Image: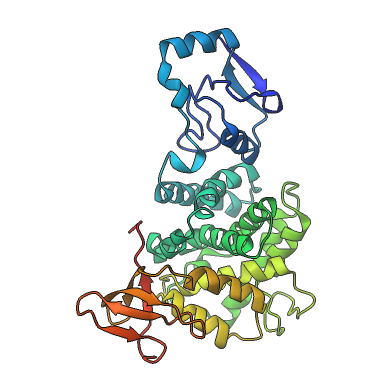
Length: 364
């Protein structure tokens, strides 16, 4: 079959891909013999593809005649491989990029987009994956998991806050790269298995600056996102770093990354800290960290986490399994729960010693 290279902007629906298309991915983002549909044009845009190899018109007719099932062959980006496989591939790739950054290398934005965008596409369609993120992680590789997860959580929050898709993707990339500057912090400090000394923490507090310097000259990242990367550890009450900025000087995008960063950090197993329930963490962010974060941003995260459909399977902190019966709008992190084993109904808003430890999703 004769193939030709065509510019993406000149492609017409119905053209047929002549060879597997990769974009710094282990598996093709679109397979050979796929008939182009609107969702594929979106994939080309997301991965900044300028040209693709397609069969010429005469070859298409022969191909369809010889291979009639091609009419139905279409593999949209999120469907060809599981979220967990995408996620694990991204972690492997990010480890390699960190080694490059440690050695003084620059950020390859094409590789970064290739890691995060397939995950964004899936998680924006099904937010339940956020409840699985900490189960993929492990203390040894926490930093890499934290980068990916922060970007993904930020993307869901941005969608909840009503931002358009282009901003959502930019914010996810910024969230993913917010801790890229940790590559410039000594591994002796970065991988320490106990609490940091003051002088060690002072070194860690320089990582937003290092992250900013890594992204400073990347034209594909908007200036407001570079600022958000630099400010993602600032707090509205002035208690953050690196400059101790206060409300009015901290960007809204920085606040979104900040809340995503804190939420994932507190719900993850780390070398010197055990993970906590996402519901308990939401309560802590809202109550104990009051005044540090924008209320609208915190509320967006809360809505994402606690808005559980009736019948959702959960585990309580005493290890009993149950299902959500009713969400109390005055205490949304503590719904009415029916225990599966005994049938007993428990109101978590009145039994404060118990809380939801995890959501049991269809993915686990």
